[in-house]
Length: 118
Length: 107
Image (cartoon, rainbow over all chains, first blue to last red; front, side, top):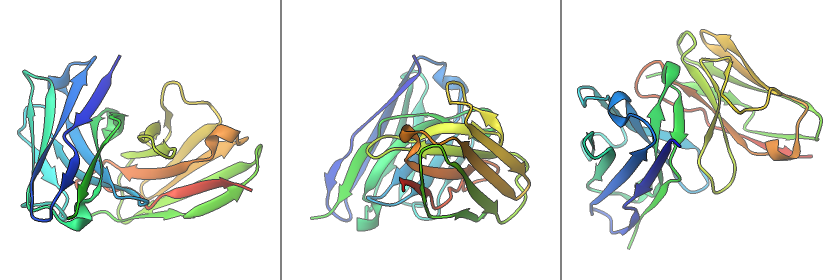
């Protein structure tokens, strides 16, 4: 079964840092571009970042550029999101998702909640 | 950056109805376009990819159409489990934007 499981969320103060992880199983992780997408409470979906299979091509949303860093370890079938200089508006559920045919996102993990506040 | 305009933002309908949700992009994206369904407290689920291809396991009452800048999701014969939020998504160029979402509610 293809599965993605996020971890690492929690409560952090403004200006703080957090590292999210996404563990992949059931497919050849090293062959796929991976993404992070977030959803603030009661709001819509916002694409955050993507990384190609070999880490050659990386993109970020303007809202996180310079503060967040996406990375992957294909030997550990894992995707990461290092989040620095966190702001209140970064509070959201963060999902990892695999990029498939024609760029669709499938599957998605169950999400991990990041809360920025004091 | 490609802007997405999804409408309506909310929709009330009855079981058995046929409903249509539309999404317009600010530039042509061929068929790099997808639709997702999301129920409260759960992750989004892929319904339609490449504008009109039905994801495996998704009921045939869901269909997608369009190309270029105008896209449509149609649900023919609403079922109780279809009341959820729906999002469009362009996968043509980064940043890979989503529409604002459509909340489909029971009338």
